Length: 158
Image 1 (cartoon, helix red, strand yellow):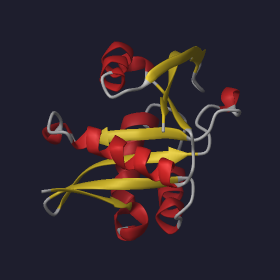
Image 2: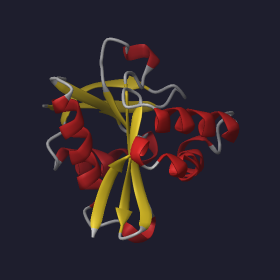
Image 3: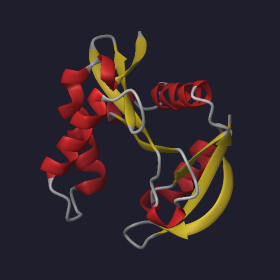
Image 4: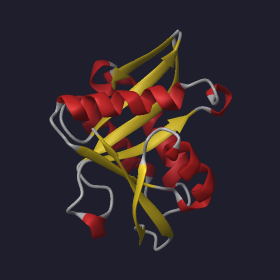
């Protein structure tokens, strides 16, 4: 029932991912939707980084995840990064996020990476640290994100 595809195989759906991303991470920031839309359109054309994956429950798109070369300007030495994990609220607690993460780990392993990194959204620090920790992610460091919020950086060995 759950299927995950690279966005490059479902190119026409990039506006959905852009919409989810904008509503969750950019709506209250000074980033126009047009820029987010352009970025996801670019990802739909790529099979290299940055790239995104989309999860389907039957025929319905229900989640996404991305991989970027870098996701923190202050930590350019770390690469690649898991980014933008999102699951529609009505499909949470069904394993969609775990399978999206697994798709990213498999992709990165196939590409020869040894580690992958992420930083935790400061709005949900405790919940996300537990979520990722139970999936094998390890604390690396504390830092500040691009908005100046305290965050934690985690990594996963591949």
